[in-house]
Amino acid sequence: MRLLFILFGFTLLALSGCAQMDTHEDDSTLAQGETNREELYRLPSTPTAAPQEQTTPRADYGLWTRLGQNFTLHTIENERIDAEVFFYQARLDQLNRTSKRAEPYLFFIVEQLRERGMPLELALLPIVESSYQPQATSRSQAAGLWQFIPSTGTQYGLKQNWWYDGRRDVQASTQAALDYLQYLNNMFNGDWALSLAAYNAGEGTISRAVQKAEAKGEPSDYWSLDLPDETEHYVPRLLALVRMFHNPENCGLIPHRVEDTPVFTQVTFDKPLDLSKIASAVSMSEADLYRFNPAFKRGVNGHGQDVVALLLPRDKAEQLRGRDMEEFCVTLAPPRKITLKKTESLASIAKRYGVSQSEIREINPRLGKTLKRGHALLIPSNRMIATRDNNIVAEAETPAHTSAQPDPLKLPAKERYAVAPKITHSVSAGDSLFNISRKYGVKVSELASWNKLNTKSELKAGQKLTVYCELPNNSTATANPSESKNTSAKNAAVQTNTKDKAQTSAEKPALKATTYTVKKGDTLHAIAQRFKVTVAQLRDWNHLKSNQSINKGQTIIVALAEKKTNPVS
Image (cartoon, rainbow, N blue to C red; front, top):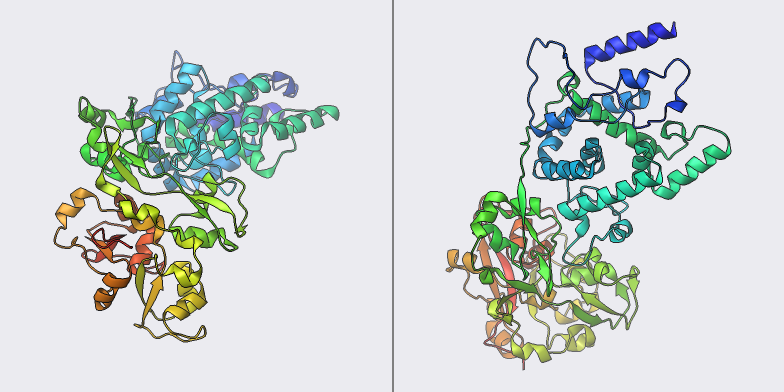
C-alpha cells in the first residue's frame, strides 16, 4: 500500500510539474523503504538526455527561466511546503509584480551566487524577506532587500549613519547577506535548511534547538525541530517559491521577463554629489535613480571625505564619462548642536526642526523618549552646500551675521521673539492654541502672550496669529537654480506678512519665501526632495493638514529664509 501511495504521488508530481524541494541532504533521517525518494524528486541542474515532448513550447521568462532550470537543492514531499504554495497561489498578482520589482537587482545577485558556488535558489530569498523592496523596514527595524537588523548589519560591515544606510545598498547588503549565509552554512555543516532557519531566527536559537533535540535523542533536522512559528514557515516558503519558479506555468505564475544581462554599473567619485542634479544630467527621474541607490537618505552620496559609489544603468553611466563633475559637487551642512533649556520630548524637538525622531536617534545614540534640561544633542541637517574646488559657494550659504546670533532654544521665552523669525498662522476650523503651539514647538502661554489672548481663548477660522519660532534647519534652504529660472516671476522674494511689512522690517527679521507652482504628477515628497527640505516643513509653511493633498497649478512655499538685506542687529 505504501509503495502505491508513493507511485501515485510521483504521478501527480509529474503531471503538475511543481516539484517539491527540501534542503536537508542527510539520508539517515529517511524512513526504511524511502531512501530513493531524494533521487526521484531531485531537480536536474542540466537538461536530461531525453526530455519528454511538450505539446506547447514553454514561455521564456529570461533570467527567471534560466534560474529555475539550475536549481540544485534536494527535495522531499512536505505538507508545510504545499501550504506555502497555496499561500502564494492566492497572491499571484503580487508575486508577478514582485518578479518585476526584482529586475534591477536580480542579475547582480545571481552572478554573486554563481561566483561563490552557492545555491541559486537563494536569489529568491529577497522575495520572502522584503518582496524585493530595498526600502522595506520591519517592526524589528530590519531593513533592505535582505532585512538586516542594525546590529547584524554593523557586524557585517554595513555602515549606518544620518545620510547613508548600507543595509539598503544593493551591492553592499547582497555581499553581506551572502557572507552571513556562508558563515551559517559552515556552522551547520552544509545543511541549508538549518542555515536558512538561522538567518531568520538567529544562529543561537537554532543551535539551542538542535542541542535540545540531540540531548533528548530526537531528530535534529530542520523539519523535526521545535522552532518559532515564523521560522517554521520561513524555509517552506522559500521552497514553495523554488517549486513555482521551476515550473511557473503549472503553478499559475507569469513572472516578468528579466534579461540575463547586467543592468547597472558602479560609478565612483571622489566627492559627494547632489543626486537630483545627477538624475537630471543623465535624463533619469529621481525615483529611478533611487531604485538603484536606495541607501542614500539625504540626496547626496557622501559627506566630507566619506563617499559611496553610485549605481547607474550602463547607458546612463556613459553619459557621465569625461564630464566635469564639479558642478554637481555638494556637501551636507554639519549637524547642529543644541542644549535644552527645559525637559521635553524627542517628538517635540523633531517637529521643531523638521526632522524625524529616528534621524535624531541615528546621530545621538541611547536617547530616551524624554530629554531633560541641560541635555546636549545633535540635530541632523537636510541642507546642502555647493562646493567648487573645496570652497563653499553661495547656494545655501548662511549670512555671516547670523553666525553670531544666539540660539533661540537657549533664550527665555520672553526674549525669544527678538531673534526668532515672525510667522503669521491662519487659523483653520478646529484649531486651538494647544495644537497650534504643538505645531510650532512653542508653549501655549507664549502663543497666547504674543497674540494678547487668554490661554483658554477660543479661536475663529480665518483669525491671524503671530508666532515667533526658529524655522527648521535655520531656514537656509534655497530653491534649485533650474526651478528658479522656470518660475522666476513667482520666485521673487515676498513678505509672508505684508500687512505688517513696515513693522517687520524695522523690528523683526524679514522673511522671504521661494514659491513653486505644482506640476502634474508632483507630490509633497518629490517636491521636498527637489528643494532639499522635509515634507513636514512644506506642510507647516503652507498650512497643509496631514491628509491634505496638493493640486496642479497650486502655488506653494518651498523655502523660507531671512532676507540678507535686513540683518538682525
